Length: 154
Ligand SMILES: [Zn+2]
Picture 1 (spheres, protein in one colour):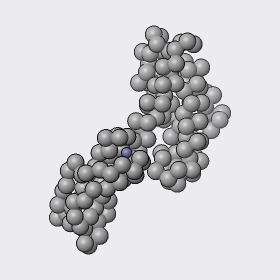
Picture 2: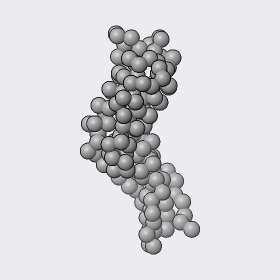
Picture 3: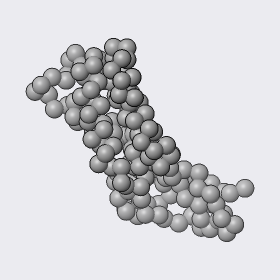
Picture 4: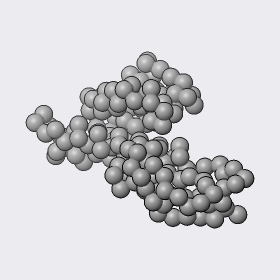
């Protein structure tokens, strides 16, 4: 794995940039690994350490690709926007993962509805099955949320 990393084709924004992005992303994945619902935790449960390596690599590639143009203009030594951009990027990816983890709940026999929620506080989106179209607490910030949409279970 390590050897393979060093013999890659040159990266889009250069190896130095890639490795800086990689470092920031790995830091995030390491600090969130213990928390259920976070993408690092989910990938470890699915595929162990190897899945986390792959996740870190894919996230780094995606970030480098998305901010390709920024490297020539906005990211320099005095500009904090590189770290800001990574933070925004990671929050977005965590929310996508979160939605993935919390979508398509499996209804029990008493459940009649699937409720969709969007939290205005933190942007989380999730779904819940229930016997009535009730409010739910945001799994990320605990705000009480009214469903944005209610679907009947067939
Ligand atoms: Zn929330």
